[in-house]
Image 1 (tube, rainbow, N blue to C red):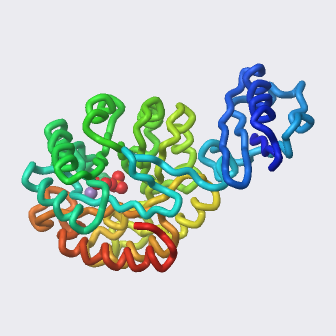
Image 2: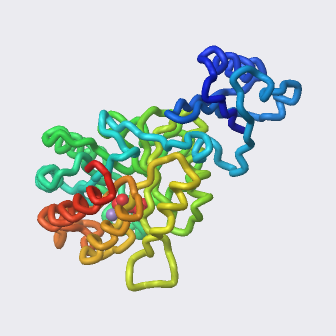
Image 3: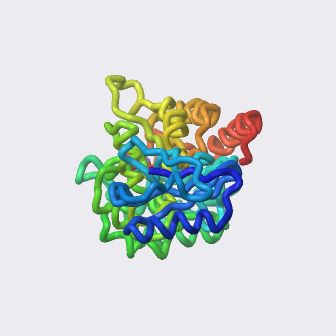
Length: 337
Ligand code: PEP
Ligand code: MN
């Protein structure tokens, strides 16, 4: 349930409402927007059966949240949340550009990737040190050595570092080296991993599962938020359909649906959706035009030699060209890039 406060309510009115919630063993999530102040009730609202909150000073109305996800719902923060990743804001008017190779392979590769990504204008460097591969015989990542290289390359070029963790045991290992955890499509419903990243303060990039509905995805975000970490960014990366011409099918419709139903920023990964370098630019432009809050794109200094996802990685040159076109679309729709 959310409690919508009157436009002219006082700070004391809000404090009194929160105090009543606390007295009844409930938590409160305060959202102070430019239009409305909203108090989200956290916990079992039947505990409030003996109070009529609507009679309290400053309260306009109490509205039940019908969805299974509450903190991730749009009702909770009608203006939308922003996520601060080491000083870079994701959400609001900003268009967040994350790029880098599928996997960290060597220091030389990461330094070249970081140089290209930075020169194009991106602020975030990606690179997987732990790779969730379909086959156990495929390259699995260089693990902690990769985290160290990612951090070094990001720092050398003043970029924020984003990396995937595939298991809850890796949280303390990766935490010192990255600015944002990525939870991959295959782990979207790894509930222990979700809960445990929820107990950290580190921003989380939560990819949509290969065959998950938007509702299941938002419920997964709720797992993280219910543990206290509200710094969640959603990432649409294509879903499995009957079509085989592309690796996955980019669900562009997920962008307006998520923006309507959730307060969380949503970015798009065209690389894993398309699976082929030639299609990445087109999907990127579509995603930005449709209202995505950013793009995460695979860029490798020498894609042909990549140890994973070779077919879909862009050269730094192709990424710089794409970036220029994305900038034009972003500016046309009033976004800052
Ligand atoms: C990745 O980002 O390299 C990755 C494995 O992505 P996904 O989880 O979307 O497949
Ligand atoms: Mn990849």
